[in-house]
Image (cartoon, rainbow over all chains, first blue to last red):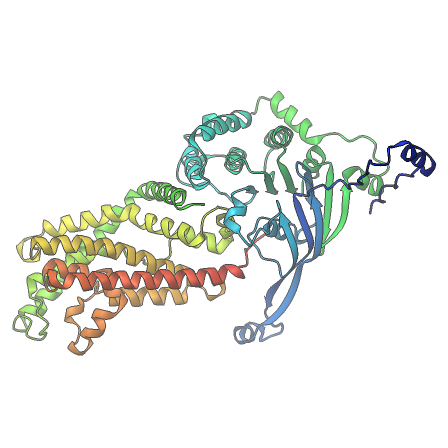
Length: 307
Length: 276
């Protein structure tokens, strides 16, 4: 854990000197700067039931009649706060509870215990209102319609999110231009490559100008060029519009390129919350410089004019 | 989300799903062949039954052979509205956990899926349905689909057929809501679907079932899938009986929608979104 910031030392003598010079009728209000956090999670817990077949010779048969139920604690009291405009990396081994947290924050899953307020509201209480203000990208799932051109999917999303036509046009033009997918709009989704599809997924998730974007392994399976394009785009989007982003990934280069702050989760608990640099100082102090392999591979692809 | 934008979203979803369905034209054509084959088979069977049993003396519910033949073709035409299996897109989403993605949409999941599945059904159904009925009209005299009993009866038939679409869709959603229990598997849903198919009169016109069952057959929900509209067409239900009959279809639609919504909302409270 990172040490809390050292409290400022007050120079009482000097303060008294200033105060004594003030007219008596001036009242001094001491206001604590209230910083409204956009995402607040407190002690969120969620357990799942897992059915296991009894072991042994007759296990298969026995399993048909009785099942052993085990409780698996996916989240064991997670709590953190994220401010508006932050870009947070959320990492941890497989099965640590990353996706579960994202599902809780996007209102899909109701936790067993704990509080969660996002933009001042509980996500699962009014799911429909909540999800109209957030964007979610699941790297392994698609939100586009498989058999029809990409543009048709976007048109449906326009109506689902009730985006005004004018705004939709400018936004679509902007997103497709920065992600370089204008040429793909008339192609059916099933004929897109994974990298192309992922870019289109991003467009789909950002059309309605969400204030928060959850990215669940967005770069999974992408080549170096697509990865870099995606990262640059996310960074730019965050800088321009102050979109808060929470990114779960196993690709540490993603985190390094994008996130100032990292949260590490394991066994359903938050193990680390702080700068990425802090992790490096602790676990890899001897590493001084590191080759950006993705940039290197991308340069090679470009050199061989593969893309 | 207000009502107007929900409607707009629904229309949009309906359109894209129809467009998707229309891409599978070959499946629609093969479906027509199945329907026509099945219809012909039934025509032959009924002709044999009527011919060798003193022109339908074995049933006193007043359904003559030409009426039965018309019934067969129309029932084949309306059959496509019925759900034989849960909408494949929705089924896929339930099984691999994409329900999560659907829940990220600012729409009520029931409304969303209702529109999706009914549009998916209609995407190819109208083509298949019209082609089957056309084939019925072109059959040789003894096996051909006859004219409606009256103009008013035909109007009632159209209205009732529209209602049948709503009823079939709401029943399909009811079954889908039950299927959200992943661990139950396909068994219960297929049983329900088969059961409803038999009671809809598509296999055997409900009027030809035993007398003591007639009241039950009229009141049960599945007759509204095909039997009620078809009977209005062939005139065994008079236009004066149309209002209560269509009312019955409407009533059962409401029941299925209410039940489907309740089950789905209950299920969503403790849903498990599968996969990482």
